[in-house]
Image (cartoon, rainbow, N blue to C red; front, side, top):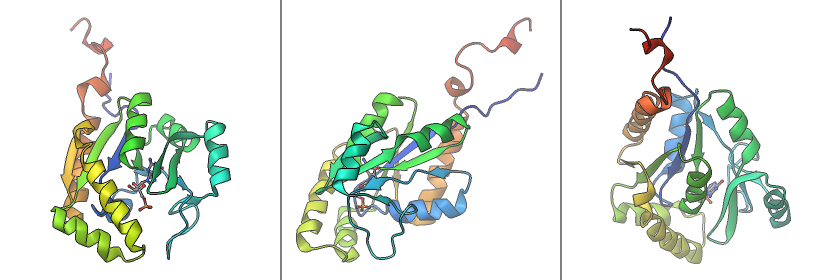
Length: 207
Ligand code: 5GP
């Protein structure tokens, strides 16, 4: 009898303060790990330049977002700096059932909700190389007003306080290295004994 060790798809949650470089790391991962499925979130935030509907986000009005919440269409959702963000449930559940690994790039309040309904998910926190660098990256983005940048810096501090709820920490000092570390975590997680065999496997009997 063959021994199979590739079980169900993993749900991976990647969080980290604004400015840690989650977006850049996710874009690099999309190139390097096409087998990973990326969940596209719904948001009430207006699109930034270059963002594409259905690829960057599903851009919604507050009314549409409220309807999604009321109909139970979101796996998790949160308010972040004056806008709402949420993960469409059906897409994620269908891909996991197909055995695919699904990555959610979400903030900490949403991650907490995911932990309640998917305790077996893998929680990874991405850190910038330093707080100075974080500050420079938030300021340097330049796509938002002074007030939004101040709010994002405050949100970043609050997010950093939640780091203890995560399983892994990756420092984004270099994008390629951060991607490599994330992929290594996923390989290790796929090989966890408790994901492969919950109990003593049948084929061990009679040996
Ligand atoms: P941004 O406006 O910079 O694209 O995203 C702001 C924050 O919202 C980031 O921390 C991002 O990870 C988070 N975010 C994006 N999509 C979701 C989502 O579906 N749910 C939650 N809870 N956070 C999200």
